[in-house]
Amino acid sequence: MSPTGHLAVGFAVKHWKSKIPLIWYLIGSYTVDIIYMGLNLIGFENFGNNPWSHSLVMVIAYSCVAAIITWIFTKHQKNSILMGIVVLSHWLLDFIVWNNLPLAFEKNPSLGLGLYSKIGFDINVPTFNMAMVIATGLELGLLIIGILIYLKSRKIDANIKVA
Image (tube, rainbow, N blue to C red; front, side, top):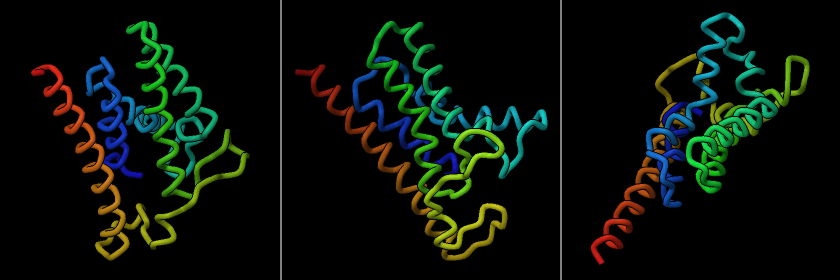
C-alpha cells in the first residue's frame, strides 16, 4: 500500500481518545517505510527484497518496540497498545495489496493477497490506466475514512467539553 492508505489508521486510531498527539500516530503508521528507506539508503534492502523492514516477524518486533517506547513515555497501557497496533497495521494493509511480503528473512516464503496484481496495478510501471485509478481510489478512500473518523471523534470531544 502506498503511504496514503497507511495514514488512515493513524487518523482513525485517535477515535479511542488517546492522549498521544496525532503526529505520533501518523509517524507510527509510516514506521515500517521509514525503516525501509533507511535500510535502502545504506544498500541493505531494495524494492522487492525487504525482509528486515517488511517481514511479518520484523514488523511484529517493531510494533512491540513502538509499544514499549510509548509505555516509557506515557505510562499508559491503552496508548502503548494503540501505537503497537498502528505500526502492525502497516503490514496488515500491505498484506492485502501486495503478494511479496516475506514471512521472516531471505529464504522464507512470501505472503500477501495481491489485490494490486489482481487488478493489474504495477508500482514499478506507473502508467495511467484503470488499475491505477482503482488503486488510487482505494488509497484515497481509506485516507478519507480515517480522517472522517478522526474529525468525528474531535467533534464528539468538543461536544463533551461544552456540556
